[in-house]
Length: 257
Image 1 (tube, rainbow, N blue to C red):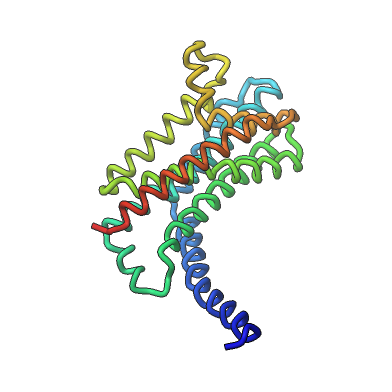
Image 2 (tube, helix red, strand yellow):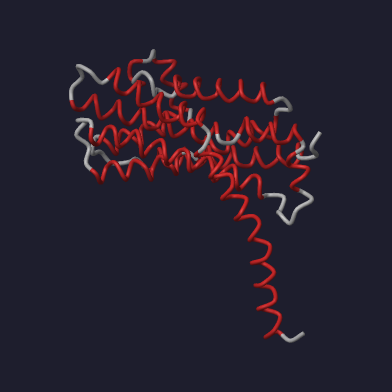
């Protein structure tokens, strides 16, 4: 076969291989937006907290609260669309069945990761919309910038969710670990209470966690500040470390039991 004919043949094979994967990713996205529990936890709860705690605060505090609640919802999207569902599919044998299809072994991971980022986008968009049209004073540009930034930041908790999903053998255990991670990282990262109100030793703990830096990015956007490169670098480092850990756990755990 000549080089001229080999190149189109390889391209056609790649298209045939990617088609089922893209179809599966679309399926995961549809399943995610139709999951009422995930939407309740990552959209409705942050909105409720925003409405309850924003009364009586000044404009600056309202913007900071909006940033925290939008970040709270976005990181939850990355977690709940990945960990418990991935564990359940491993245990039920669904992933084993997928291996009998033309799907690549990474299709499930890509689907779950895309679902996590979509849920983070939906949460940050809706919570941001409540802030935009609810009197917090943020502009449309800040609202949209917040959506993009928090979706990118959610790669951290998406990777964490994939790690949880690949590490646990029981869906109930994975659900508990996901919820504990969500609440613990949110509280210790300063999304519920401003980090400067923590004791000094707890502030040191908060500064290590990725959720603290996600919150700082969100607060810089809503208050008109400058997003610090250091915050972005720490978030990216956490995402890389958790992504590697999830990959290792996935390779060890995908011999579906």
